[in-house]
Image 1 (cartoon, protein in one colour):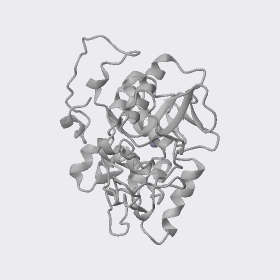
Image 2 (image 1 turned 45 degrees about the vertical axis):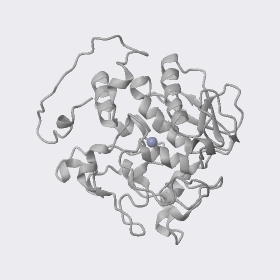
Image 3 (image 1 turned 90 degrees about the horizontal axis):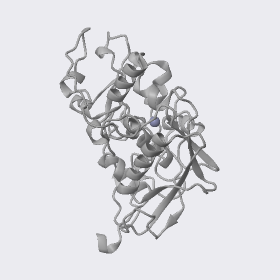
Image 4 (image 1 turned 45 degrees about the horizontal axis):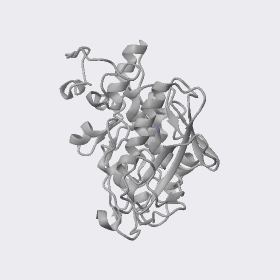
Length: 338
Ligand SMILES: [Zn+2]
């Protein structure tokens, strides 16, 4: 919601502010029309801070403390990169096990297009979820809209199924101050917490949490994010002095994080290294420290800095997000759709 010129208002105690008043009807529990919001992580947290009367940071809001990334799998993944496998991870195939992403891929497949999905893919991957007992209709509406975005753009049918048996995701309110998700396909059931993600304003964060459910890690945890990796990157210039110790792990590379993949056969959408995706819905925004001595307190700059404006997108799936899932789940168009 912040005009671009204002989001660059980095120093000083005062900033010009342009205020808009919405005169139309409110939708789904108090939102202006979703298509008018164009949310990014920083703007949504700003609005929520005004409402709450205290400062809420986007990362707190979206991933909470402890972080959604702090699953056992993710901690193990963080430790991986130093040792390395001897080959760049974009030579890894996108198979059913362990796959080419940080989280385990879902494996239930069907040639029948699930209800509401266009019959265009050779087969579909089914990811089942159900709502826990305490979830209100406003959250459900927003979450269903987030799930529909993944269905629209990929062959992954994220579907609501009250009768789902293992593996599945349970969608509930487990901590009202944050939103988080487990990572990838669980052995029994995984969970997404919709605590702070309470209405359509947070649909982008719900898409983000569903990304974790599908196995996507935070984009800035790619091996080529903050250091060079087999001749690629770094994509970010880190100012480690500014990074709060609680957040360091979210900027450390995890070699399991998707970075491209081997030739998986058919019309493979991605062979080899994938371009770093600043616009990814899985990328963190530019967090800041209150100590503004170095680099105005920012945790990082994009390389080049002209890409700073792309990070923190919580409006839409980026082309890179879509391509990653098409690749990881081996989505192939039916011959007549090519
Ligand atoms: Zn996250």
